[in-house]
Structure formats: C-alpha cells, structure tokens
Length: 196
Image (cartoon, rainbow, N blue to C red; front, side, top):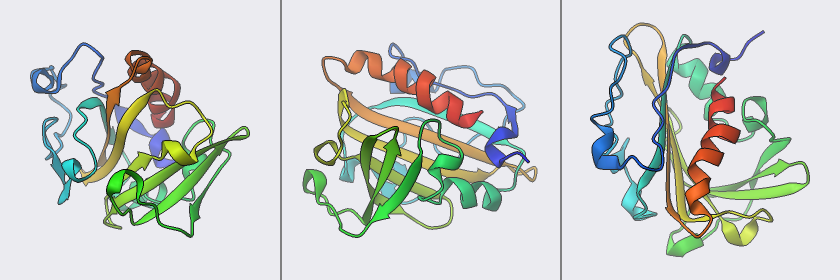
C-alpha cells in the first residue's frame, strides 16, 4: 500500500542558493501543474504572517501535485505524530506537554523528532487543523547541529481542482557560516526523499 506522498504525479519547484525569492516567480513552471494560490514572495500563508516568527528569506520551496484528495494528504502530513511514516530518518515524533517561547514568540505547542539517537525539537507557531501548519527548529532543545538561524518551515495542502492536491513545503532561514550548505543538504537529504 502506498501513501499519498508516494503518488506524486508531477515534479517540484525547488529554489537553489543562487535564486532569490524575487526572481523565483520567473522560474518556468510546467503548464500542466495547477498553481498554488500563494506566490513564492508571499509572507502571509493561510492567514499566518511569516514575519511574526522570522524575517528570514525563503530559501527552498517545493510544490507537488498529488493524486490523493486534500483531506487524505492532510491526514498524513498534518499529523505531528506520523512524521516517521513519510519523512526519511525519523524513527518517531511526538508532541510535548510544555509550550515554548523560543525567539520571544509563544508557540502553540512543540514536537520532538528522534533520528537514530538524535533529537530535533520543533515549535509549532501555527496549525489551522485543516490544511496548513508552520514549524520552527528550537536550537536550544535540539542535540543536532543546525547550520542556520531563524528557521521556519510551512506545509500547505490545497485542492488542485482535479480531485488531487497541491502540497507546498517552504523553508525560511538565515544562513550561518555553514548555512550555504544547508539548502542543498536539506533538499537532497530530507525534502526530496520525503516527497518520494
């Protein structure tokens, strides 16, 4: 049995290190793909203002058209305890009882992901419960090296108008000394395999 994320019908748009957000709109997109209602330069997604958590630029954006209906995709991607079912390397993920105030922002809740003994803690500033959520790596509660700062990731599931879904995954961050390697590493090691 395959999961909705294994039923990818068309490819993705990924922003590389040399592409800026402003030029991203000019990147050619396949004409057969439905287009997300959120432009790459949009800082407000499903009513959530990215600037409330970070002023970091958009570094990676992947948009996938999936054969599965939006509810089916959301039931998998939107469940914070099921990341291990589709995200490579995660052994388990679970919600934490306490709230975090990472970067002077009160988050809704936090989750932890375990990778072969390593723990990555992510704070959730936004989750509308129907088709979108945002998460931010909490470097103070994580025991893995994170080569960027002011991270924010956002998932949005939209109806593609043909019975399927558009899944958009955005990654915002400021690059540190090692941050120049973060985008290709994140895209190649985690984001693209998670979408296969």
